[in-house]
Image 1 (tube, rainbow, N blue to C red):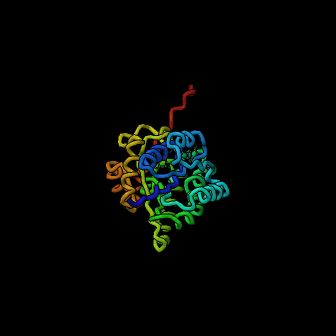
Image 2 (cartoon, protein in one colour):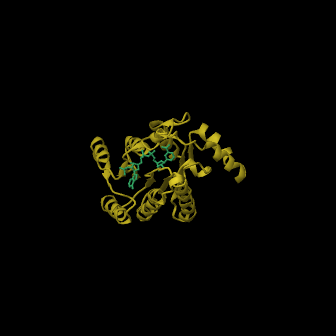
Image 3 (cartoon, protein in one colour):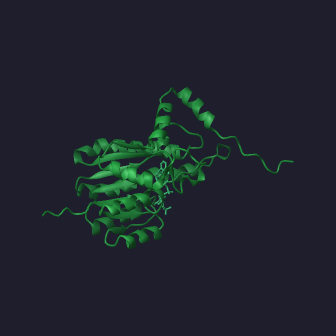
Length: 259
Ligand SMILES: NC(=O)c1ccc[n+]([C@@H]2O[C@H](COP(=O)([O-])OP(=O)(O)OC[C@H]3O[C@@H](n4cnc5c(N)ncnc54)[C@H](OP(=O)(O)O)[C@@H]3O)[C@@H](O)[C@H]2O)c1
């Protein structure tokens, strides 16, 4: 009987939210998983729950040297990667009345630049892997300009382009690329938003992503109902999109101390 070695994954943002639930799905499949986030504690818990399957490679992915060292650690332990899922990210809203460019800088650094550092570290390992696969978690925010999303909405279209452009250039190497575009998923990141009726619980989202990854589609966009609402909204001309965006702006909160 032939033995198929376990698939070797690297998942970023595995400490919380979508990444933490996706890590469970991957580990339940028997695969080996390298996990990253700045917080070490949740990654250590995973490695205790799935002994022999988890490689903890924690660190701040906005630091290119840290990411290089993570790549070296994975190379030393495994020599190759088969699937890389770049999921780590953040969302901070901008208040244009006190426009703070440092928010844009931080969000772009976390969502876009860190992913490019990870791609640089991952590619030599993927080239040594089996049926190599690169996955990036973008967002449905890339379809339509939304209010207060000057930072998040700048980073994610850049991330989408990074993956879609890489898809073309990596095809000759046999590395396939998928972009994941979540709408709303209930995680610590979205706890700051008002409740979203079309949002999905995080475990459901992770099961869906993991199941879809098996077919290696170009894009995994969900929840379907949310996409069915959003996608047509993204198609009208710019002037109509502007009108839609303006309707979504929330009025300022009341000033409590006014006499
Ligand atoms: N939830 C949604 O509705 C939704 C919608 C669209 C897109 N997304 C995207 O889906 C991805 C996951 O989102 P989520 O909702 O699961 O967020 P989350 O619960 O806040 O988890 C984000 C993960 O990324 C890690 N991370 C953040 N900054 C990092 C850094 N500098 N270095 C290393 N790790 C870092 C966090 O760990 P540490 O803080 O410990 O570093 C955490 O594990 C993100 O890319 C997000 O933009 C989510």
